Length: 235
Image (cartoon, rainbow, N blue to C red; front, side, top):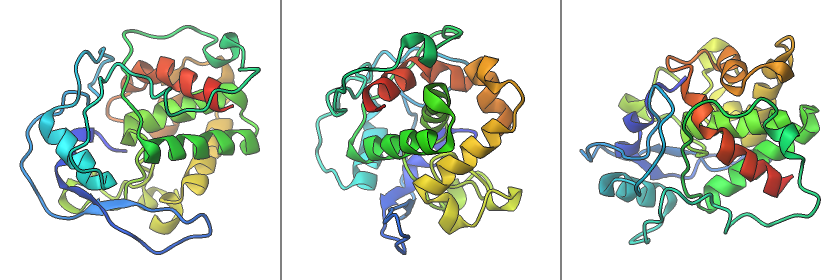
């Protein structure tokens, strides 16, 4: 799994790849630019985000998503302005039954991230993991890829990790084409989650880490609130 989100941001750009039935696009390498630190990247422990993205990180995101000169939003926003509000939102107890662990982080969502969040929530419904599973899935993808569907990033890749969940073909998650398909990758994640005995009763970070086996097992916890907000609005 991806250990540091900062490792791939300096070198990403939007590149079209072969279409799958779900017509997805993955972000791949387009050259290296030295951009420095990233203010809103995940850390080994949950930490609140208090400022907007680093200017270099913003430039890389704009390059990756085709946005030039976009206004940097506060990283404290939820992306709720882009998420359609639905009636009969899931009960908060179903979304966060155990309470959050530690300080929480938030990032703004662009259209690509929102589309990927929708794909994860849809896969959660179809996989039968319910609202809680959807929260775990969205939080995991927020940590692993910031809800971007990442292709192979060359020297910036962590081994052969790709996609929304940074799954590895060499670990049996599927082919690169499969794991960069949001529907496939999300359902693969939920399939593994369902194989964990009593996963619904586990804290989010424990459930996610059991599936992901990350070098930073406590980093997932910081995204639980935002993931719950996203699921509540999309469910």
